[in-house]
Amino acid sequence: MKEQNSFWTKPAVWIVGGVGIGVFATATVLTGSGLKMASAQSTPNVKIAQYASSTPGYAALEQLDSAFAAVSEAVSPSVVHIKVGDNLKPSTKALLPGQTEQGIRSQGSGFIYRADGWIVTNDHVVDGAKEVIVVFNDGRELSGKVIRSGDSRNDVALVKVEANDLPVATVADSGKVRVGQFALAFGSPFGLENSVTIGHISALGRASLAGGGAGTIRSYAGMIQTDAPINPGNSGGPLVGISGEVIGVNTSIYSGSSAMGMGESGNVGIGFAIPGNQVRLIADRLIARGKLERGYFGIAPGDLTPYEQKQLGISKGAVVRQVPETGPAKAAGIMEGDIITSIDKLEIRGQQDLLNAMLDIKPGSMVTVNFIREKQNKSVSVKIAELPKEATAQVQPQQQLPNGIDPKFFKRFLNPGDGTDPFGDAPTAPERAEKPSGKIGDKATLGIAIKSLDDTERKNYKIPAGKSGALVQSVETGSLADRIGLQPGDLITSLNGDNIKSADDLLNTMRAAKVGDKGTIMIERYAEGQSFTKSMNFQF
Image 1: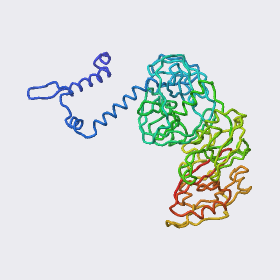
Image 2: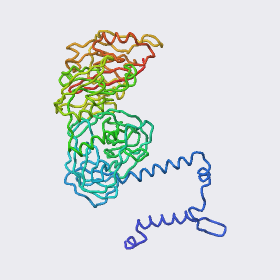
Image 3: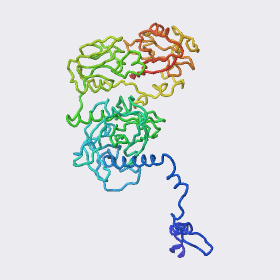
Image 4: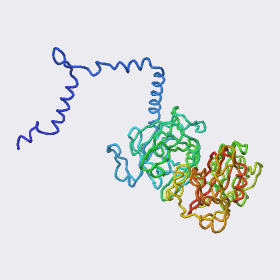
């Protein structure tokens, strides 16, 4: 028993000893005259050396590699890790990667916006927190005060720490961002601080919904899509171009398993960032005013699709997708399909301009709204109201679902053709049905049965009073309608720029459609307390 406790019989010693022997054996070469020590660098890889010196384009790759490293080194000092919890205090205890401190409720990222201690992050990161702990790139930890926007249309918040001469991240003009450009995402995914990932700008002008605290639905418009890997914990961190300037704030991802926000399943190559211009606008207002106030116009705006722009002969404006039955816009005569081009002297290029205009117009103000209806310029006076507490944004969610909404409700748009019908059994005996055809130039069909609305259909499909359109009664398997995700209960409100108020309107518009033509369709879908608007481009 005594020998078992001796130095040479301890397992840890044998493990270390084995490693040492292995290293010795690896570092020796057997020659004719015996054993000889060999340097690890004594035999260079000739192929690699030849590749580096003679391969065309290697120098460019080397420069690109160096550029990425330089951007990372320049930006990282301005990126912070934000910890949210209860009774948190700055910690000096080192943690293992991925390990969380006791008391932390959530965590995210941010970046230094001003040298005097103003830090930008996502509102959903600090939702419900009065104070947070900010961890800087150099290891410092400071308590911070949260300044929130309280606006479901803007997921931007600030954290103020008592510090000066902090390294600031410069925010770029995000209006100059182009699809295909390189992008670097900074932050603390899963609590792993000072992480950098690289990808591209995948798309611009995305709209999405994601869940917030206490069941809040947050809506985003005009977002930047990127394939730079973003994971839980990256929220609030900067998305940066190769110039080293912030082009957006990493906010949400498309999660393949849950199709919601910053899901625990991690990145699948589709992430979204709030554009830098929008971040700057909100941050400056919060610093100056301490809060945001938003007037209520009473519409659900959207951006014109390229097809709509061509059909209508205009390049900018915010199209009215929905008009609630009560609200300033409805009272002033604004209708679905109207295209708003300006409010007073504010030019409206798209839905984000219209949303931002409501931040500058106080409730109770009378404004002149200029718009286009059926290619005719019109104007009307509108009295902007206070934002109702129950008012939520009704943008077009192209990627995500808010917390608390049944995923089946939108599933046919996320996974067309899966046959899911969240409304249950559809009524039978459609009013009219179309027959498919296939040759280029033939009369085009959608492959649906339709009818005009009556009280029974409104009740069956939870369609509010005052809504009109062509109701989809059934969808033919494999048809165009099936491929783009239409389903029974959908209300078609527009086709190829024509307003659809009834089944007859849709049939009249379809008479001019030929197989091979390009088209755009707008539908609305309803369920208990929920609605969804979608505009889709397709080819007959």
